[in-house]
Each structure stands twice: as structure tokens, then as C-alpha cells.
Image (cartoon, rainbow, N blue to C red):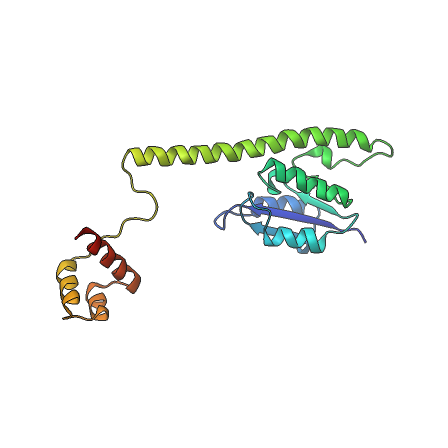
Length: 202
């Protein structure tokens, strides 16, 4: 029996799938037949997608996605995945690409395939360009921040009050590390990170 599956993806755990899920449910796909991932579109090695691709989808089934970049943001990957499904007679329907949703008249399939090939080429190029533009902006932002002397990454550790005296007592053996941590109100990892910083500046 031919089945219809939906696939939704966002890039990070902080992002929400709600909009995509609503679109797939409104299209008529059963919730149990929708597979999701919270993973970057730059990798095809996603747990949900690989399960869908290798274990669930069968010859004659249909895969529905909200937009083409849910498959990937890499043009080469998008084309490779679509070719994979085509060879296995799995239809891919893209809700944001109406021509992929149209019923195929007998003998006219080649027209839709030609139109979809052109549109997919354009949209795949756009998805990849958006990814490249985002990466370029991130790199430019990092470069500007470095030029301005801004600290990137995690906030720098700050030495707590009474650090110098407690550190000295610990080094001299008058205090155990546990006692020093308790006195300063620090966790073990923070304490030893500050020790490294202290010894690096002396």
C-alpha cells in the first residue's frame, strides 16, 4: 500500500517546527507519518531523515516537505537526494512549489518534470546562496569584532574577591582545594580554570 510521509527540519534545538508541522497536517498527512529533525541542513546524516529515507519510504510512496531547503541548503545534496528518490519511484512534493503538487495527466508527465527541474535548479541555487551569504556575514562579524578587540565565545572568567589570598594559602598547602573552593563559592572546574589563568599571568 502506497503511503505519504511528511518531513520537517529546523537547524537548531532552539528553533520550532510548528509552522512546518501545521502545513503538513493541513495537507492531510497523519501526525504519526511525519518525521522531524533538529539538525543543520549542511549534513545529510540526520537521524530522522536517514530513518525515513532508508527504512520507511518504499517504491511508489510520496514524501512531502514544506520547502526545498528542508532537504538541505547545499545545492549538490538537494539534487542528489531528488535523484535518489526519482530512481526509486518516490514522489517528492514541495508545498511551496505548487507544480510538484499537481496531478500528472497521462502522457504529460514530461512537462511537469521539465518545469520542476528548472524550478528546483533555481531554488536550490537560492538556498545555497543564502547559506553562503550567512556564513560570509558571520565571518565578517567575527573579523570586525576582533578588530575592535571584542572577546568572542564564552565570557572570560572573573576572579572572585579574596582570590589572591585563598590561592596563596592553597599553593602553600595551608588549605585543601575543596576548602578553597568552598571558601570562594566556586565549582571544581571553575576553580581550576582560574588556577590556570593565575599561573599563566605570573
